[in-house]
Length: 377
Image (cartoon, rainbow, N blue to C red):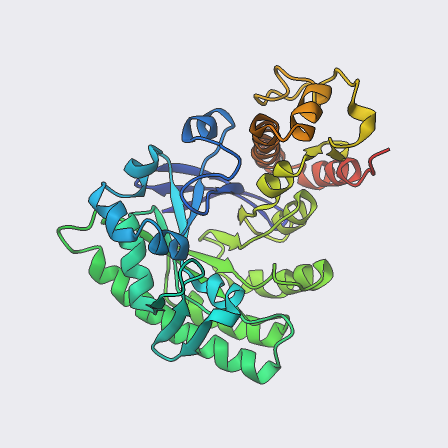
């Protein structure tokens, strides 16, 4: 159940009650594609850096180690040793990202595995069955994420099929949640709004899926190459047509500035690989902009990545030491940067929630963005 606590303009301060605990929103979900955060980050680390929700990938876990294996081991929570909420995506994004390896039909999508080339079929029912085996807290509906440059006619047909798939997902999820051997019989289902950068298609689709009374609603297909201006324009158009009394999730987004702007438009769930990916390359976020720790100017810098930060890296180590680790290709350097970035994102979400609680989100957003956009000297 989603509880809308307060609004500051369009910004939402909410609370989602789940079988695996309460999620305070707005929230950033830390991405662990193959049931682990890249960068040697453990679930013990996730507790320390204030992670509320971990996100894993249905397609990748289906391919390896296999969702049946995970089910036999007690589900994803037990497998990972993580007792807080987990969201699993549906495999729908791989319909987009593995375009060269798949064929889309009404019944579903035929893949060739990116690992060994073996044939895989995934439709709405199969995606729900895999996610039920994984026993995540929140399952995402199976959809197609069309290219941002696709023709309007193609996108219209794709969205209509995604709606039909969503109804099949809901029916299958309802069935699975009643089976006696289902690990999580309270698994939630979020639907996904699609429509490229066409406002009319997006709005129509939002109106159609809002009628299905799902546990939450995502806006997909806005991190696939379109401009930030187009992203914000589509959010302005579509979010008002999604139920305000349900979570609104912007998939795959994004930078801290993207998140701040989307919160201002009524979004309260986010995920993105940026903090972990950038961290693995020595790029770290601070309130004064992003730093590249490979830069020579940090060779003798004995200050932490950011003064006052309480992440595991900043509490103990200097920029100079972390730079040395990165240059020496020691895994610890990558790990410390990832931990810092995820802590930065999770802390920013705490600040966002506090600002909405206090009714001064606009002031907070303006101040935060001004700092974040500073260029590294």
